[in-house]
Length: 221
Image (cartoon, rainbow, N blue to C red):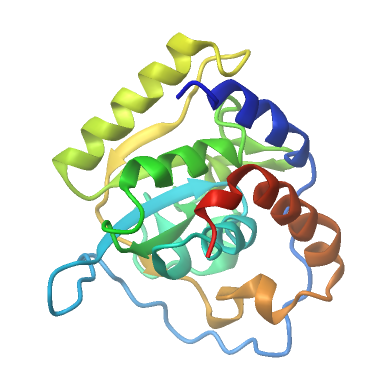
């Protein structure tokens, strides 16, 4: 925790540009979203699941894919009332969902606390329902915990952040139980890797990744 303030100050400059709604790439097959509410585990029960919302899920997905111990990242929607919402419905703000990522990780290689450190280090958790130019409840800072341990760890970490003065304003991250996770349309998955040459990826996501690598290089694959 002693490097917390420096981490967040270093990354604060990457939070200004918006996710927007650029034209989907050629792989725009969408179909119905699939609800996933159970935690994924391998046959030895070694894998665990975390759900984070930190603004545009394209950016957050690209960052968490880089972490050692993360096996899979999927973009999707959680926290709303409508089942199988579409991207347009979520973007309207009417469904109550947040853009989130589902992180399947190996706790033997990366802990939930490590994931929290990255989560709070790569977005601004002090702006309510907003990340940079992206405004609305769909872009809120949120942790959807899957068990009591995750809840306690997240709440304790949030308290320590506020007590440490790591941010100039209080952390407003929502910490709520996971009720459902709906996988986003196919063209949202692996977005940066599939569309790295598109303007949003090259102008917004790539600079965020470069700065993330400088701060969290010891946690990367």
